[in-house]
Image (cartoon, each protein chain N blue to C red):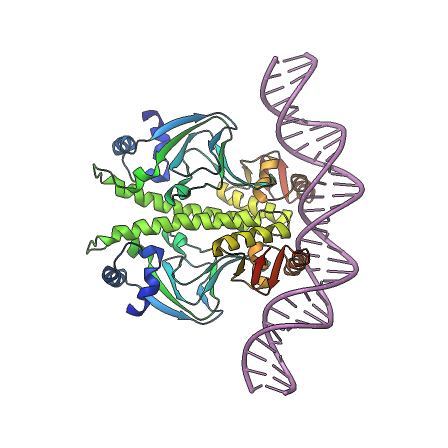
Amino acid sequence: MKKYLEILKKCPLFSQIEDENLLTMLKCLDAKVEFFDKKYTIIAEGNPAKHIGIMLSGSAQITQSDFYGNRTILTTVEPSQVFAEAFACAQVQTVPVAVTANEPCEVMLIDCANILHTCNNNCSFHQQLIFNLMRNLAAKTILIQQKIEITSKRSTRDKLMTYLMLQSKKADSNSFDIPFNRQELADYLEVDRSGLSTEIGKLCKEGIIKSNRNHFELI
Amino acid sequence: MKKYLEILKKCPLFSQIEDENLLTMLKCLDAKVEFFDKKYTIIAEGNPAKHIGIMLSGSAQITQSDFYGNRTILTTVEPSQVFAEAFACAQVQTVPVAVTANEPCEVMLIDCANILHTCNNNCSFHQQLIFNLMRNLAAKTILIQQKIEITSKRSTRDKLMTYLMLQSKKADSNSFDIPFNRQELADYLEVDRSGLSTEIGKLCKEGIIKSNRNHFELI
DNA sequence: CTACCTTTGTTGAAATTTCAACAGACTTTT
DNA sequence: AAAAGTCTGTTGAAATTTCAACAAAGGTAG
């Protein structure tokens, strides 16, 4: 576990917990590390939720697919980020999303019950852990609402611009990369890929943005 | 406070907490009750989030509006339900939503800091309260994802049918009322009102649903 | 370096959604 | 009970989005 310490220290779940306590706690929580190759399923749709995931390396996407194969990308998961915590906390019996590796990944899995029920050892930092989990859940809720802010726009152009402005703000720069290719961006924005490409072309011609593949610049 | 006991007992925030403890706790939490008339703003967009709300009577809507006046309804709030907890827990400085009374309301407001920081009295049920809050947050996250499941459908018809099927499931009956009028339903589904009316008309003619104002029946 | 595969941009036609405007039904107020 | 206001369904035109198909560009594997 020691080699993951730097990543884990950045994980919001473990903020305010000292290094040595962290390692003890991981043992106490029975944390496991698993590997997934690109495109492999980390959590499958339809299964019960038991584990909270923490991305150690690589990245993944959380997607929702319907009957017709339309899918929407809910979020991407980057190293140090927590995922599936809402389903695990709420003890959902049928997870409505799939988590898929975007590239080769290392993932830490922790049984949620071990977090919620304070352990026999009654470790003091367990309280802090629960507290952190709550903050993280709250933040996640807000992040999802941000997606609604974007996709509730009625036109492809408005959705795209809203998304790009939020990304620019996040990167704190007019020039930034996005974690999606075209099809993925279309799935995130809930629009047609070709229409999205067309709209990007128009915005470039109008001199509002510059774009090259997944690099964008607001002007 | 005593007159609200029946409503509060149904509130997920207070599950597993006995009546007498509940009343003590509300005092300890410095819970306040406020009244709002129809259309009044309970929480205004852009303000910092401090309080968690609990609906005691009446109902409210949580909405997000953009620059052009397009709005989307995130959820409705019914008696015993908690609202604004995500923003309060995450200590958001600028709430991106507005909470508006749908009819005359009584609302309980509790400073979130009083919940998160266990009190001086160190009451045992405070731990349970925090635990409940977390479960509630998790459930809320899932509820918001359900809205995404609905609105990510590409056509008005699919959005409407997905919504109606979820409502039917929730009501555990083919015949049910929805908490929206036409304009509100359109705002929730993120579609045009007239187009929605047209689509409802078609579905009725095709014998797939029956509809009268806010009452629906799936066939 | 070539062949193959994936991603991106483009296009036109078809389908859908939005918009604006209005009439009738329903509610609320006076 | 009338008047005023709100909500709902309809309509046609305009705008937009989706769909399917293809070519060009970029990447990968042998």
